[in-house]
Length: 185
Image 1 (tube, rainbow, N blue to C red):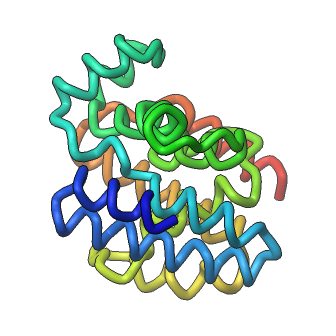
Image 2: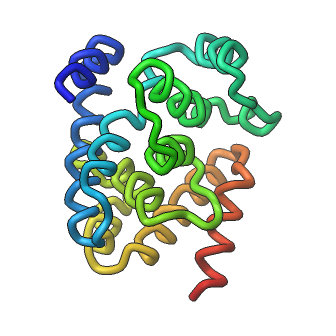
């Protein structure tokens, strides 16, 4: 794992690398709390932003090179492109072949319907790791250790409102995740 950390550190800006370590640490804590595989949480948390060191243009080009499908909505909200690309980079550059880890990386920005516990943990850990500061983060941090689904719903709610306030596109996968979690209550 040290090889992966060294390679990741070289690929990311220092603050992004610190964020990745924070997500990794938070993901392991959440995995312990909810009985998920701590090693998978560690790896997915560490590598969730492995493609974030590239510019948006480079990310788009890499997606085409690696066969990562980009829909028109992703191109309208390019901040999410690093997630599916990250899954491809984690597999191709870091040798990760565990489909559960790759899926958690792929959907850590948009979420999706039928999320696994690991998917939820990585989505949430990305939002609540210690360096994050935004209105509502303390509620998320508290709720994260009380009820995972409630915390993920709140995280999705905050994401939707954030995008609504900016008149930004909301990815359909985010809405599917919301609907899936709400109907399951």
